Image (cartoon, rainbow, N blue to C red; front, top):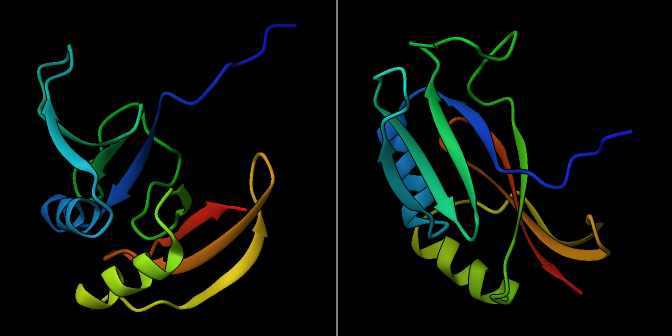
Length: 131
């Protein structure tokens, strides 16, 4: 049976692309990139490490798409090498409320220590360190 090897990108449906770029770039340190797919459209992605998140505006979806794309329905976990106490200070500077944590969780490869916040659309964002 064939198997998948990894995740290349995911799509995040957002209410406002500029507002989302501001949060993910300024608060989480991702890099925004405009790209031009073969269909001639202009799209925006957030890059970090070797991954990316493509942003799709909820008001202007294009095909193919999720069956029910909606802003605020995601739950994402990001791993960081920076200690969570550094994240707590950084989030405070950006006036981002920590809604839970630090709390112990289980990640893809082992135990995590995590903080939880929300992005501008209300998506649950987990920032984690592997123990």
